[in-house]
Image 1 (cartoon, rainbow, N blue to C red):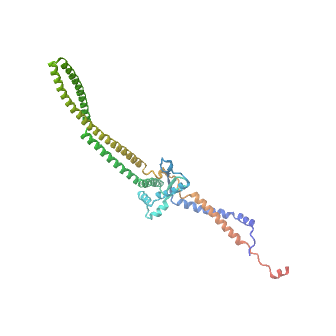
Image 2 (image 1 turned 120 degrees about the horizontal axis):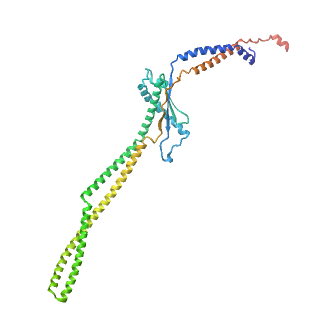
Image 3 (image 1 turned 90 degrees about the vertical axis):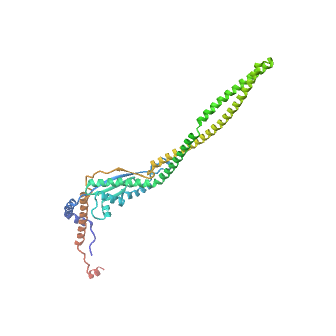
Length: 365
């Protein structure tokens, strides 16, 4: 059986053997520093992508930037970490070394959406710092392009529907324009209106001439009754004949005025109706074209918008090996190992306490 533990004795034991700690630390440094310097250097370049909320002018459907929304943005990590995208990058920049592409991806690529932010970081680690930066920038640009392409595919249905409506509206407008051109060519209104104006003026002159003839007839009748003049009777007969001719001509002109008025009214009604149809078709076409323009402008913008915030810079300091970190870890390991070793040695060196003889115990009773 061992004696009870004495903390003061243990601490004193460790203090007297401080050289063990120093020696272990020296050995650790001597081993770790050359090994760290011999390990090939690797550089890490980081490209940054910012995820903007959807562009939406309607405040009722605006995206609230909440913790839940920010957490949902982690789904964009899969764009940057897409296997096919990395395979294209590996082929483009000749990263493949004959091993599995999955292992190369795990060793080279790291994608991380920073917590509670809209920032997505793409880190690429490689032996050549310039190549690491180029690969990181390429992956960032392709990630943005993939996101926009997916958004465009989602909005393609809206664009196609707007295109169909715009094409239908343009066809209707063209049809109404052709109908208007045909009506203007086949049933022009201006000649009828000119004829109607001329006939109206002629009818007014004939009416005035009839009034003048009636006055002459009344005068000749009075002279004939008072003087019984042969000249008055002849003039009266002539005036009556002229009146008959004028009345016949006036009636013909009146009928022509009525017919021309009906024709002008009919053509004017057709023109008004066709103008209304043409205006309606123009309004519908303008609205359809406006909607198509809006759909094309907003295509791919209904969802989150990814853009490259920082393509990254060429790293100047290697990310591995980290000599300082390796030395610190080695020193910590050396201290812990020395402490364990000395603790075991302290326990093993202590002398056991023997048992008293049975007779002595019985005598004390």
